[in-house]
Image 1 (tube, rainbow, N blue to C red):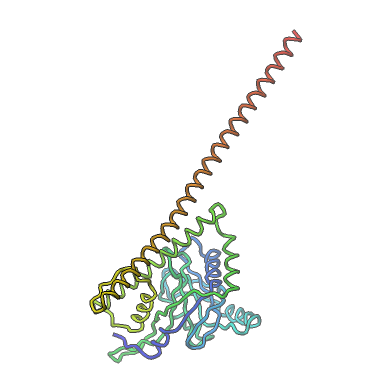
Image 2 (cartoon, rainbow, N blue to C red; image 1 turned 90 degrees about the horizontal axis):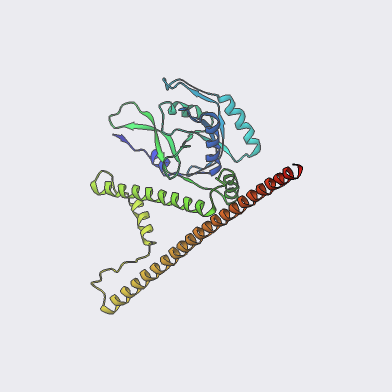
Length: 332
């Protein structure tokens, strides 16, 4: 089993945040270069790295080719990387080359070699795998750092990637800009209510996946397959402390008056929550009924108008026939 070094622990606990603009740029890069193929795209990440926090704020695409049969054969235009990096420095000197990305969706055999190439520009490059075609809800990024793997048997060390958590964060101005960009690619035939419900459904699916991960972690800790991490357990305890207590606990040491007061407050809170949920569901139900009635009304109006137009057209045809018949009779 490889041992864990202080460098590895420091990299694992780094805060990596990715701007939404980087995701949009990577998706556009994939759509232009490798859509409907098994190829992956590679690009450069720009941002800031202070040793504890890594902020990925920008990116640009890089010409890249690799042999599908032999993963050791690949080409990356580092001259293009250098020229583009110099141009971006002139635009924003604070954004430095901090790593690279590819569309994955998983790590590949040549990633360590490509990572060594990027060490020309930054001492410890960050690798972010961006899933441009996610199959499930959640964060579509996986961040990695390359470290030396120290083996317990004393053999030669080797390079490997360690995973570090990543988040998607944006400033207020960037959120507004991304929102305007997403408006152009949304389905205009879908209403605002449908869009909001779809977004909420995706958020709930992502929450469900996170809860599954938490449950799997706790089961592994109970089984002994994973060690106890007090930092993670403390964070989970903070989450549960924020949840409202809607259930009546079983009191034993408190006085009867205190027990009655606590039970009464819990029952009142649960009753209030139930009333609030019922009111919201009633509003949704009424809006659905109104929408259905309006649709039926429009359908009936359309049928009446179509029938009137059909009757008018038939009446005009009859008038034309009568005029023709009268003309033939007069001439005869």
